[in-house]
Length: 48
Image (cartoon, rainbow, N blue to C red; front, side, top):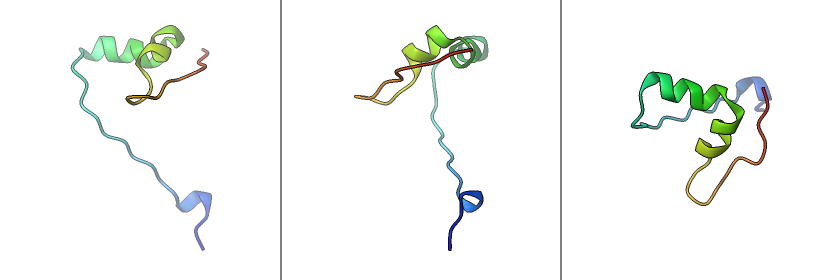
């Protein structure tokens, strides 16, 4: 039987951006909304 504790998701992707720009994109709600999502997908909400 698999439980939530047994599950793991790892996503790897190379992004052409400086570490500072990438950090800001993940920690600033407005930037996260613009960056997050795959082709055809999007983030609908982010908050600090």
